[in-house]
Length: 85
Figure (cartoon, one colour):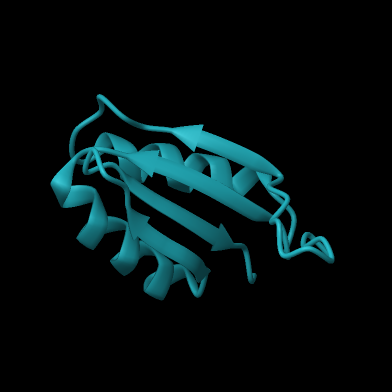
């Protein structure tokens, strides 16, 4: 699996979409997801406020699991997705 015993997640990929604006972060995430295997975890960083709703909708539509979501102190969005299908 992609998780270590000490609860530190291992990502197959990390995608930094900071500086990109709607709909670019969504396009980048979709493209990355198509290259991954089922079960892979991937981390996405974004700073476009619209990305929060866009990526949550994308996850629901593609049945990808949001393992973690948070906003850091700078306002950046941090998603960890698990490819489910």
